[in-house]
Each structure stands twice: as structure tokens, then as C-alpha cells.
Figure (cartoon, each protein chain N blue to C red):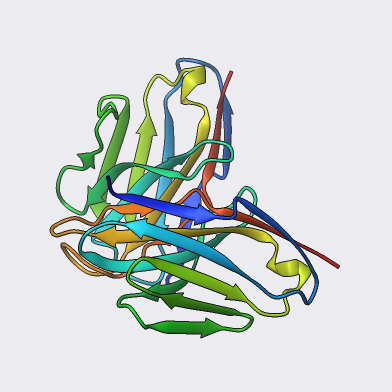
Length: 111
Length: 118
């Protein structure tokens, strides 16, 4: 079954404590993996797109990587404003635009 | 760039009322827009794909007569929840994407509409 799984469900970090979020997927024909950030009561905010294994993208304290089975979102020296739910979504298969979302990781960064 | 505006942000209304939600792409043309529903502490569930100038494609289990979608221009899609009932209360989010047909471009999301039916 095509599936996207994120772990951990929730993560609490101290400010400055680096860590990684995981998104594993079991789909055939990956066409793109997307990372989003969602704040409470808001829509997801686009962060990165990764298209092929070995690809990496960086933006400020965030770095996303992709292998053939999973993606990691590395957060370096996080700040309280990085607190949010991080969602990954997968686009796969042939003639479809349908994204499959993971259930997200709720990140809390304490000062 | 890639800004999507969604209105209203919050609606509270009585059971039986029809509610219209607008989704606009402000700085790009969106031939394809998507409507999602999100339950508390759950991920996004795709309801339908809206294609400019043609009928929307609904996901299995989504009532097309209950959730009417219109995508009349390259920058505007609307979702109308007809005769809404308390079970329709939810967080509805739209997204828009550049590129025609099947595309690998990312979707950009609006800020959602919190719908509460009394």
C-alpha cells in the first residue's frame, strides 16, 4: 500500500539543540517529495521540493535530504520561532497530481 | 511569490445554510487548484481537484452535490458547501499550482477556512 509515515509524532527541543525529522515513503515512481511547515490555524507553507535520491536543499536553519526510501528534515540550532508542525507529502505514479501527506511532526522549541 | 489567498478565514452559521469559500492565486496563474479538508491533529485529506474551465474531479467518498466546485478563471476557484450540517464543520484548505496537466510543481496553500455549523 502506498504510504507516507513521519516520525516522531512530536518532538520537544531546547533552543540550539539540533535534530532531524523523518519522512519514510513506500510508493512506486516517486515524482517529488515536498516539505511544508504548518502553524496552528494556518495553511501549510511550502519549504522544499526534492525530486531524486541524493538531492539536498537548504534554507536558513533547515536542510532537507532524500534517499530512495526516506527524507530527512535537519534542523540546526533551532529557535522558538521554528516551532510548528512539519508535513511531508509525496507525488508519485503516472498521470496524477494527487499528493499523499504524512501526519506530520509537531515540533516545539523551548527557549 | 506564489501567494494563495483564501476567504473567509472563519465562518459560523446555522445548519442548512450554504457557504461559499474563495481561493485566489495572487501572483501566478493556477490551471489546477485543490481543495482539502483537515480534521484536528490529522493530516490533509484531498477532497477534489479543480481544473480551470472544466469539471472538478472528486475523491472517492466526497459528495459532489454537497461540495460544489467552480474554477471559472485562472486565478479563482470556489467551494460551496451546500445545506451545511454540523458534520460538515471542519478546516477547509485550498491550494494552487502552476503548470498545466500533470505537473511536478509544488502546491501552494491558502490559510484555510474554519467552518463551524451550529
